[in-house]
Figure 1 (cartoon, rainbow over the protein chains, first blue to last red):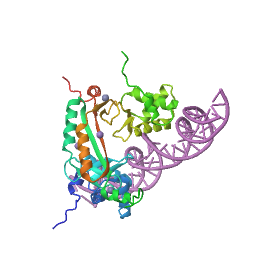
Figure 2: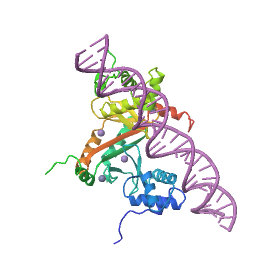
Figure 3: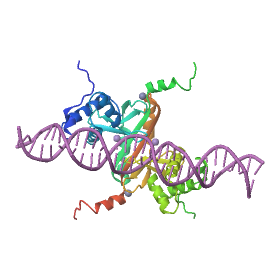
Figure 4: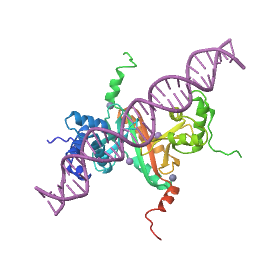
Length: 153
Length: 153
DNA sequence: ACGTAAGTGGAAATGATTTTCACATCAAGC
DNA sequence: GCTTGATGTGAAAATCATTTCCACTTACGT
Ligand SMILES: [Mn+2]
Ligand SMILES: [Mn+2]
Ligand SMILES: [Zn+2]
Ligand SMILES: [Zn+2]
């Protein structure tokens, strides 16, 4: 009966220091966003919603969440960093829509194994990986069709 | 008998427009670098070597080479873009040393298959992937050991 | 309640990349 | 070789995300 929209947990806040009102607002907005969003965009959204958190604080909170493993980070093509509240306790990879930010967690077992093997056989230390998939989601693809290459039926 | 260091080919230049002296210098320096290097660093190197190419031109040339598929791009952790002359005609992925830029092409068959499958089953259009491995190469790891956690034998 | 370490926010600094635009130079076509 | 228009160049300024500063709050253990 209870709806199962994602929620912020006290757990999230405990990991990054003191529980301030600002952090609660940022975390709340991030959870509600349900997808990848930039610090700038999240800040605008907060201000628009009458929750005037400083931009520096938004950056600090998102960075702290990411470091604590409570948020995932995605580099978009312009180099901007997008954040998303991490649904579970484990590291994930996503397929992200370049138009609207919609993100879909993808099954990444094979890549993890691949990356681990390379890490082991390379001789390199502290090997990390960054795997990002991006594309245009069905909705955005449909919208895009109605504008250019107007292939009449 | 002929050494087989990588060389710039006329082919590389043909793909990006006119063959100017500046482009030849940038391409030459990129090839000689034999690893990932930033536009800024490459520019400094050119200036130091008495080949005063403008920074804008370095950026333009590297970007053009990347678009033409003659260079690979790597986003380092600070968001800076590193370039490397692409050894062959095909798309590759690398394991890059975060300390010195040394890069090792890695066998990426499994990831390509994985990414292709997701692209096909996701419903997304124009799916692209970015896969980056980074770590500390043996040489740099050795150097790092002689400085901190001095665990006496 | 108090004291204080931790957090906040507006403004300024940073730093990579892009843009501008007056000037130089490729590469055709004669 | 010489003219010429499209293309390329570069110094400086603009952009823009992110970080740093620092005087002022605030959370929270005592
Ligand atoms: Mn992974
Ligand atoms: Mn690939
Ligand atoms: Zn979309
Ligand atoms: Zn190294």
